[in-house]
Image 1 (cartoon, rainbow, N blue to C red):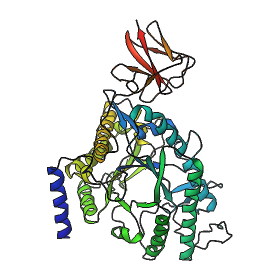
Image 2: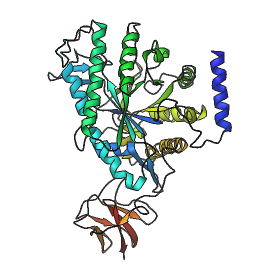
Image 3: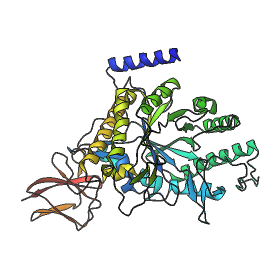
Image 4: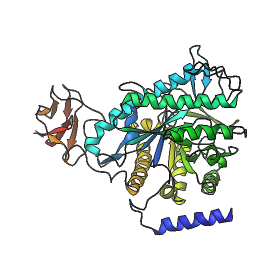
Length: 463
C-alpha cells in the first residue's frame, strides 16, 4: 500500500509541475473517452432522448456566446424496465418484481438505438448538425451499451437463436446469453449506419459481484467482447466487495462511485476516501448528481425521487447543490481532473434540467463543469478552446434565409432550423440550441446580425 501511495504522490507532483499539453495528457492508457456521460434510456419512465434532450450533453454555450463540445463518450444504460404485465424486470441491478426475459433484453437495445430523432439516432443527427460550427472532434463520439447480467438462477429467459433454452443455474448459459447480446449489439449497430458515432464497448450493468463464481463468467464474457474489438467498462459502487478485482473480470476501464451525493449523513471524507481507493486500485472516478426534485428522509437517511408536476432544480435544494460543489472542489484539490478518466451520473436528465433553468446558480455550476471538461479535452487533443460559431465557417447562402423587418428579423420560407447570431457570435434566437422555423420573427435592436441555416449564412441589417 505504501508503494502504491508513493507512486500516486509522484504522479500528483508531476502533474502539478508539468504544463499539460495535448501530446502529454493521458487520462487513461486504455480508453480515448475523457468524460463519459451516463444516459439512462430503456425503461418506459425515462425521458424521451431527442436531440433537444441530448443538446446540453453534446455542446455547451458559455455566457460570452462561445461554444465547445461537451461529453466525448456516452453510456447507454438502464437496469430495469416494465414488462407487458406492468411488472418491474431487472437487468442485473434492480429489485425486480419479475425476472427479465429475452423480450426485455431485445427491447432495451431497441430503445437505446432508437429511431430517427430518438436515442442514438438523435445523438448521431445532432452531432452531425453541430460539426459545421464546432468543427470535427479529435475522434468520433463513442458509445458504450449496458450489458444485461443474468444474475437470477431461476430466471426463465427464453431461447437463443439456435433454439437452446437458457438455464441460468448453469454458468455456461449465462456466458452464452451475454455473448448473444454482444452479437446483437454489434449487428444492430452496424445496421443503423451511424456517421458520427463509434461503438466502443459494453458495460457490466451489475454494480457488485459478491460471489466468487462470477469471476470466470465475466472473464469469458470480456474475452468475447475483446475478440469483437469492444472494450469492457464497469462502475462499481462504494465498498462493493471484490471491486478491486476488476481486472480479473476482464474489465478494461473501471470507475468508482463515491456514493457521497445521495445521503446527507455521509461525511465529506467519503470523497477523499474514494479518491484514495481509486488511486490504490487504478480506477477512474464518477461525479454524481441529480436534477429532479428530491426528498430527504432524515429517519432513514435516504433520498427519494419526488415526481412532482414541476420538479425543481438544485437551486431549490442548496444542501444537494453543495454536495455537487463538494465533488468538483475535491476533484480539483486532488487533481483528479488532471489525471483520471471521469464518468458523470446525472440521474434522469440533470444536464438538461440545469441547462434549461433560469436560475443563475444552476447556470454557474454548469459553466464550471463545462470549462473543466473543455480543458480536459484540449489537453487530450480531442477539442479546442471555446470559440464563436455560426459565422466564420459558414458559407454565404445561395437561397433566402432571412430579411430585416421593423425592429427584427423575419425567417424566410426557405430556411430550416435557423439560428440568429450577433457579429461576435452570441446566439440571440432563444435559449441555447433553439432553432427557428420559417415564418418566425426575432425581435432585436438595430445592428448587423448573422442568420445561419443548413450550414449557410446571410448578413441582415436591422434598422
